[in-house]
Length: 91
Ligand SMILES: [Zn+2]
Image (cartoon, rainbow, N blue to C red; front, side):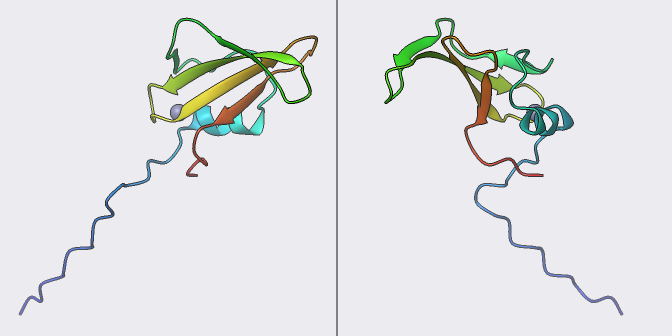
């Protein structure tokens, strides 16, 4: 006798786990270099100003491995940049 196992319900939007490169980047979000799987999404960086009037530029990247979207913020006169994932990383 075999009993049929009901299939698990599939979520509408399956969350894709972040790859090791993206997890590393999230843990070290002030380094300047993109990780090797990141592809620049737009050619021209967006240049704007923060609420405090500090100019910054933003570039958008997508990971070729796991599809995570990243924004790289680079503020004027700052040594460090910040990488911000567009959605919370799935680990
Ligand atoms: Zn990734």
